[in-house]
Amino acid sequence: MPTPSSLPAPLPAWADDAMPPPDRARPPRAGPVRTPVPAPGAPELTRGTLVWGETWRVIVALLLGLMAFGWTMGEIDTGSQSARFAMWPLIDPLLGTLAVGLLLLRRRAPLMVALLLVAMSLATATAGGAALIATVSLATRRKPHEIVVLGTLFVPNLVLFGWFYPMAEPLFTRIPDWVMELGAGLLGYAITVITGAFIGARRDLVRSLRQQAAATEAEQARRAEQARLCERDRIAREMHDVLAHRLSLVAMHAGALAYRIDLPPDQVRETATIIRDGTHQALEELRGVLGLIRSRDAAPAAATSTAAPVRRPERPQPTLDDLDELVAQTRSAGNPVRLVVDLDRGTALPTATSRTAFRLIQEALTNARKHAPGARVEVEVRGGPGDGLTIRAANRVYRSVASGPPGAGLGLTGMKERAEVAGGTLAHTRADDVFELHGWLPWPA
Image (tube, rainbow, N blue to C red):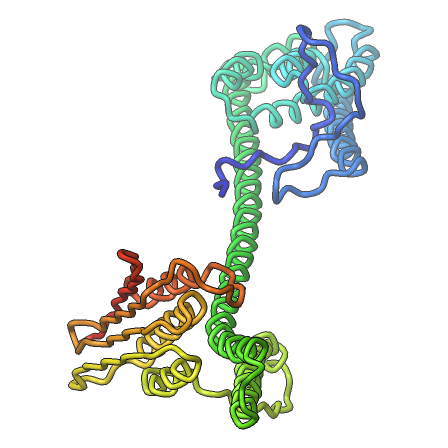
């Protein structure tokens, strides 16, 4: 899964102006023009957002420039300041308007545009606002070499501006004006750079948080999908364990009725009764599984509902206590079963382990009926607290048998997964036409 650091950064507000030029070595491929896709978590950029982002910057640059120009003209009117060139007050607004136009190109060449605007502000008061915004924009990139290069031109700004608009009298008697102007320029530049660096750091932080939020949502969606798949596998395994045993019995007896037309009426009635009872039991167990699924699906709705739903009590899951009934059903299907149970009851066997052991034996007997009808099956269950529970099932497999009921072929896989989930192991071998199943489940002391 992609980490937040590997996710692409969202498109900046100037994305339409900052697209790299096409490769000159390759001709552009024909086809529809694809617009850049923002990174996950990035805000949606619209044309209106881009236009407004540039509009308010232009307005602020114009207002700051007009305020500086008005202050300078006021000082000239009072005689505190003068213009070195008589026509310069008329040229100043024209250059300031050009500076505002250059401000719109700062995203394509940040350092070059900032240098041009600061250079224009050395002689024109109206360009001061555009130069200030361009400096802040350059500082958001937080590249030391760009800040140093621009600082060499920005810091002496007031000194050179004083040459175009000289003061009538020195402001300070003991300290030269140029010293104070350099100090003011250095302080102003430091404040401007710090402001821009803060804005850039905040943008990166917001972008990182958005990417992390998008990555978290993607991870949650992936986990939810994985949980759904695991739940489907669990339901499929449970339904297989529940239905395969019952339906194999029904299929076995139905096959006998289909081929043994010479059976006496009493035996036909007895076999039909077994088929009916087995079908009813399969339906009951299927209803129990489906009821469990529905109860889990309806849990969120029930949590918000004030009325308590009336549900049918669920049937308890079978354990090793039901092993005799399971063996009796297998014997009735025509497979003799030799059952050996040797358990140390010093500590009660955990219910989950007992249920898992029952399912493993049930699947082993079902497979024996399907693949070795009539064959003798040996089942051994031994163990005790601390030693674990050992399960062994063995039966002879005939080389040629009649076709039995179809299977999914995933019974052994499901048994192995069930044993591993319970913390145990499961293995099977086949030698000399004898199929053996060996399982072990933990039994804490």
